[in-house]
Image 1: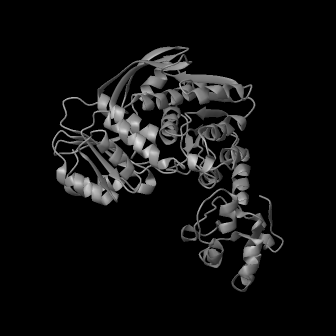
Image 2: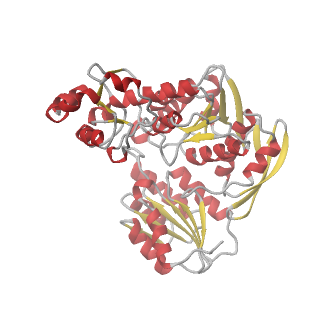
Image 3: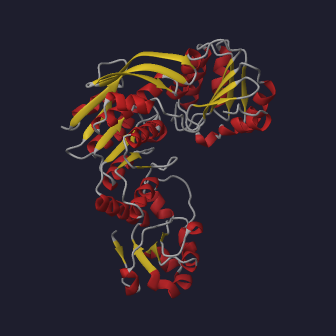
Length: 476
């Protein structure tokens, strides 16, 4: 762990610990508390100001923690308060790095296969689909929950193995947003046996400068995988397909438009939230009825299928598993209301490509409806061209044939203005998600279909909440 414990009570060295909280409010007896502070957050690619957890060390010990990991300089600054418990303190130069190294040690002791998933869009859906497939084959799967995919979230997930090492495999989403080799650092904690590359899109350009730099950052997953591992690459994304040249490793490709090892044909949306396609694998073909909409989600299913295939699953086993998939919360989740309208809740994240893909999915998958409505939140981290990107997205949305566009917060005003200029008459802007939700709740009609798409920072899920306050869902 690269920590120093010269003052630690020797008796504590003999104690077995399996839980390592980072929030003092969650500390329980017998645990070791990791006290992060601002310098560690800055050193480990986290933007913003964070509370110094050193000030909660004494409280954590009082709650029953047997020890705490702190920075030496932070201890000196808080010596008056912490001197009396110095025999319960472990000192580290960087507490987050110590936390990550502990996770790596736990991973080594477990020594199971790791599937790592990255991409500019679809990471969480692909991760959930992959975990679902592998679980359906009888394996016990560890996976990150929610958005725990960074330098803190991933070790928090891995450290669950200290409590339960009976998992057969881990499916870990790996994210990045800065040019500081974040994915490379995550691969040092858990080197992937299978590295899944979904796509490279102009996301996080604000921090990385160009889409080429985004591709380089995503390629760290291939560079950091095991020498005897397998790279799962999207054949339909030119920048991803080119990653095959980075390492001399086994490669499985997947795709729809280009030739690939795992592919889909005869893709047809029977209704929104039900996609039919033929899964094609080297071992045979199978029909799939998939409860997610859009070609982008079929690609996510193919990525998961490639992982399942690499684990020895047959085409029939993969298709049977895909037939039983349910949409994850806030990622293409279909909500049917008793008043007769339908909402697609995709409030987890957004970027121009993802917004346009979901809008096209809305247009392709809906017939015999009243109005097709898109609620689009401001898109974040788009760099210096963010205003023009929003305007161009507004122009493209106006050309899709939607009946109403609602923009939410800040730069979404540019999106609405451009859509209006292109002739979309019913395009409205609101400063916040609650206001947008209140307007939609007053004006929604029977047989309307609404796509709500936004980044977490814009909180477009509040649009859904306003609808739920007024209208009940259809009971299953």
